Image 1 (cartoon, one colour):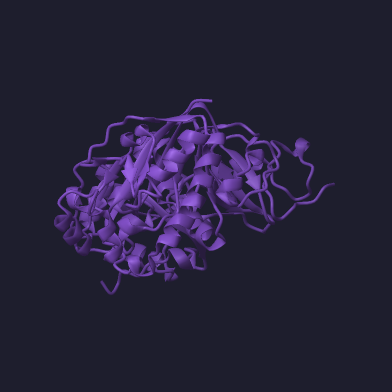
Image 2 (cartoon, chains in turn blue, purple):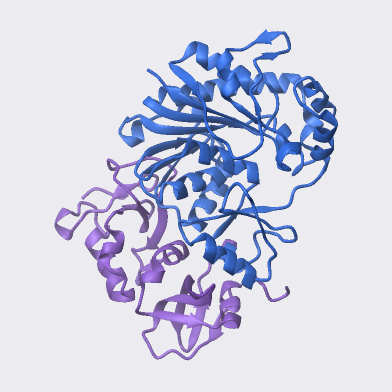
Length: 302
Length: 170
């Protein structure tokens, strides 16, 4: 847990934060509205004798305090998908519409890809990209089980994403949920931080800047991008946003979030960031009893 | 005649007259198969384009793209052609099979569990032999589980290994 102590200056009630990070999280499932309704999924789970608690801020999420999401009829029908509660935030903030062109820049294993498709009523185009074939096969099996038909899957480094297979047309929206140091997933994977190093954080921040830059360039003027991570490190969060605000044609947007959060931090480790980064939101484990998350909404301006 | 290229998605020709690749099914034939075999109305697929990648592997995509497309996946894996009997995938049956009213067999819960576990079972069925859409009742209505092959009084589960689940010990 030592990696987390560096955040004491920016996290309020740090002891509550630490103790929340030690508590495990119940499995959560998201209802796949491509194949069924929320009500029918709830009924299917109840028929299977599975206890479920609603998630207050999102009607399509259920906590299953005593069960595994994968061994029941609703799962086999592709009605539900196991997805950590906060990981459902970025697609809802991106708010894609039916018929739009959307890029999921680092898509595997596909929880957010399938959520984007469902928000679009499975109409339009979701291009789902990942650079790892093994993870892509997990993505493929999830899109198939959930019955997604508007997805196109590409195997490439998101930093060099090509629009060529899709007619060269720019995207309306992009989800940039980047690979990160995953500090916020500690409640699911308690050994996440064992291999933590500042060198890794700084290295991965370079990759994150490259992916977000490509997303801005591949999105039309006026288009929307959501940048998210499951980590607390400002180097991977506000630092990446500060970089693209300086280098690319974009601005940060205000947005609503039905969860408790803290604003993005404008100062870290002797550095000062563009004041717009305050519009990003930090979700901490002790505020909503969830995993940790960071989410920002951008508009492409050029 | 050109040839099928195994790694890319080629859009199916609309009709026989537009066919350039030998053995490639047409959109017209795909729609006729779903209507004749299962009673699924052609309007169901109005917004879809159909694509072949690999020998007879057909995919359904909810949109339009310039053919060919060289990527990893395009839409939903939909059916297998270029074999004696065309066969829908589990995914296609789960997604579109609730519109079927022909060659649909409805199992009770115990038989449905055996089917999902991948077991073959004796079944009285006085309809056609061949591939059937298998459903059961859940949460107030029928829901398709997958494809069964009915021959010699037996329903053979075609649920792929990775999608099988055995609830009997629970």
